[in-house]
Length: 192
Image (cartoon, rainbow, N blue to C red):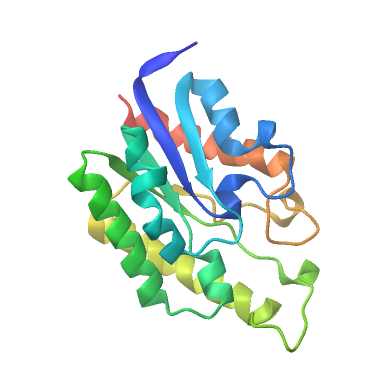
């Protein structure tokens, strides 16, 4: 079934792009198949919210969507970037969307399961345990942010560990199905 009334861009990092899985079964592709809505995936693995903001015009607005899902911040957190900077970037993207009559939908990112994350003490990244704690705290702030900004959201934060790849960071193909179901439930309420 085709639905030309809406067009959605899914904007984000590896959680949107579909890291290390068959892209045919990433959540945005499954969502397009389930709803008949044209969905463009503009996720880039490893991207930060600063990068997402920089490419927002070209990779979101140029497609003239009716809606955009915005999910990022995980890489920022792993680089120890302050929550306020990440939220500032998210806010800017929602404002650009609003200016162009595009409804922003915030994706609350998945949890991190630090047991599977390799770590080198000399790495620029903060380490698995602090990373997991930062993500948990950011999820809470982002949930408050969407309430304060009166934005719809898709909450991916409660995906259980068995739906992740061995790295503990990226959802598996089974996890992608659950992500699609969560997104579809939000869209069914939003697009009435």
